[in-house]
Length: 431
Image (cartoon, rainbow, N blue to C red; front, side):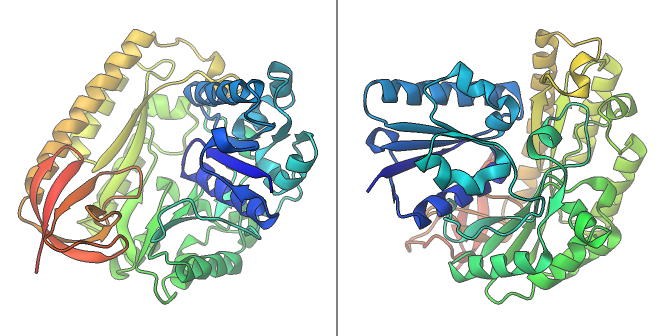
């Protein structure tokens, strides 16, 4: 029996693709191993959203080629976004690669294992639930992709070129997939897509995320339902009120804002304005005062003036997001922003990143001080660490829990917060 090792790079959306790849590989009867040095075949699922991700993928390819040249691997298969970005040029650069599988042809992985070549074309435009899937997350927490692709066409972003047009998964399929995840032990499900709030626009003529949530919250055994990648323009009062009133839906939102200056938002081809973003933040906090908010910002975008930057810096201090990802602008060939000027020098970008991180660190310190002695319900991820509704798996902070009794991953416990330091906090079990 041939041994296959799957290596997954990139974000949670990529991880769901890897779960589908692994499911198809297992269904074919191959033996799965964790160590590529013990495999006959290596399957690498790549990310290529920005240049650092490309460099990571290329480095991994070179490491696999080294193993192949040493006779420890018989075949290398590269999948995902880097294949979509480079297509057959990738094999010309690295002739040691045996097969290429694009993001649009993941269901052809077993054909690629049997027969060398490039598998780049989609088998259909409709996004369907996978026939086979092997969970790569903890048993109690799962990701569920409800849509793929993107129609937002932000000027800095390659996702539409890599993933294609926005495609929703039929609602009944999502509900059945969620039920199966719960049957296999998932107590928490995080809904993901490039834009979850646009869910259903292609199938039902309008966004229907709220209607989907109303179906999912009825699934017996599901304890937490989490929303990721929520765009502010389509986050309406109906959805916010549902979150407020339904305990199963975590009072947590991941909203990728990217900037606050109108000049930069316009250049990014974002639909938001400073006025609309501020109004949305106020609306969210009014309806759900204890909401946990995560966002991402890009600094150093072409044309970002000191005034634009200061506006962003002050916004971070003012709104007090629970979690913020700060990224220097990455110039990506194939995007509309590639030729925008003036480009910001790297030293200035890095300085601005540091200043934004420092500002957010001060916000976190303030929020941490407010946590001391408060009680909370957390979901244990390990025997020692857990999360409240306010922390998403893998990307946010956690709580180190003191307990005389051994705690079991996947269980909910009541705690009191006793110490805080950055994104790691300490808590004690409440009897």
